Each structure stands twice: as C-alpha cells, then as structure tokens.
Length: 151
Image (cartoon, rainbow, N blue to C red; front, side):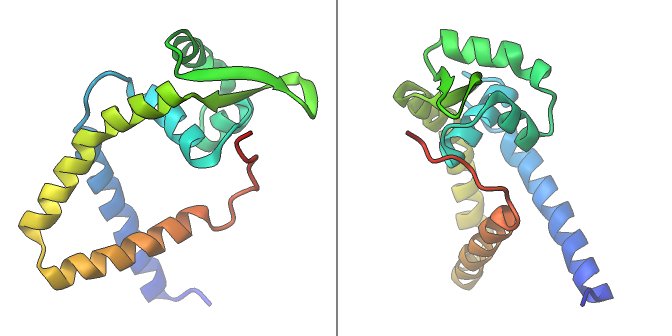
C-alpha cells in the first residue's frame, strides 16, 4: 500500500536523482553528443536492440534518432544487422570501438562523481550510498520489458 511517506520519499529521490544527473551530465569528454551517449549507453547495458526499442527506452521518436544512428554507424561505434526474427527490422549493436568511446566519454563523469563522494561524504555515508546505488539499479530495471541478449 502506498503511503504519504512513500510518495514523499519517491519525490525526494526523483528530485535528487534528476539534480545529480544534470550536474554529472555536464562533466563529459565532448566526443559524443548527449543523445549519442544515451544510445550507446542503452546498447552497452541491454545488448542488441531494434531502433524502435532504443527510441522507446529513450522516450524519443525513431525518426528523431535516424541521424544519430547514421553518425554512430559512420564512426564505427555501432553496427546494424537484419533481425533474424523479422528481416524487415534491423538490430543495432555497439561495437568494441563504441564501448571504448563510451568509456572515454563517461570517464570525466565518473572521476567527478568519485571526487564529490570522497570530498563530501563520510565513510559511513559512502557505504550507505553504495547500498542506495544497488537499490536504484534494482528499481531502474523493475518492470522493464525483456531485452535481447547481445549476439
């Protein structure tokens, strides 16, 4: 049963995560756009997906991502292959080069976040934050549709 306390906690988490995300998002290498980073992140976390599945996960229209897919493919960061279950569809997969570029793009964010954590939190708070990270990851995947494994 949902209580007022649950709603208040949910609101605080939403606001805190959004503010933290905005702050962290500003720390980047700049080799990829935010949308390119988001697409590669989806492929890194979930394996091969159709363009429609990626668009759904990013709450975008597939047409909006057409140029992003083309640019990522031209740069060798993704590949597109026919879907064996539906030849009319393509499956998009991150390449090793794409994984490397995503790592380079995310490294400044990780370093910035680690510095903040070290500077601002006590050891006990860092331990608690590690637990909270596990819980947020669990919540992020709760109720998610099944995804294809990477070939």
